[in-house]
Length: 179
Length: 102
Image (tube, each protein chain N blue to C red):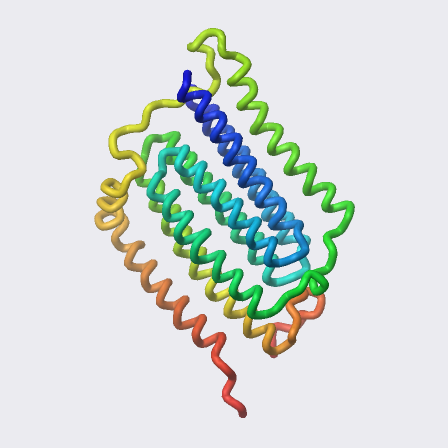
């Protein structure tokens, strides 16, 4: 029972963090604030990854996504010097629709949580049943084993893709030779 | 009985994806459209992990790791394009960037 309530509470908190961060990221006019709101959404998502038992991926989400990719976004926002005045205002009526989608999604999420909380009486009837995780689920050993056996070829292909990304980016941003 | 945790996470993922889609369609700026794409990629990753947990199959996380790597490559190329376009046009609005040449 305690685990179930804990799961519901952390799911609600992390879900709210992710949804609010996502909503702010697509509505805020200041690009720097929008990127920071997306960082918040990524941290909420990392919390949900932990909740789902995928601890390694949660750590990677914080380190690589929030720490590296979005900070690169932040650098580029400062490099191109976008100010809020450059961004056209969000359409009024549409912003309303966005809020509506957010509200409906959040209400559905909350209703699952609430129904689980309110129907406590018999433990058999608890809606949110959290099954114990299998041994070593979400830790590095099974992932590494699969990564270097069954998924070895895609893994190597991915390193080529990363190389293409590096070369492509350095080709794109270099100064044009004056012709 | 475990289905409900899956439902809650899938609902959350759907909400995030629709927010990202909304942002992609409505923001008239290249950089902010990229932000919305990142949000949509993350919603897809969340789906992978939810079903991985549902089937008790830890290797589902490998697809998320691949997805994060591809998101990094996509961000690097996209941001390179953004910098290049900004140097050429001093502007990143969709309304002004109508030709795919500089």
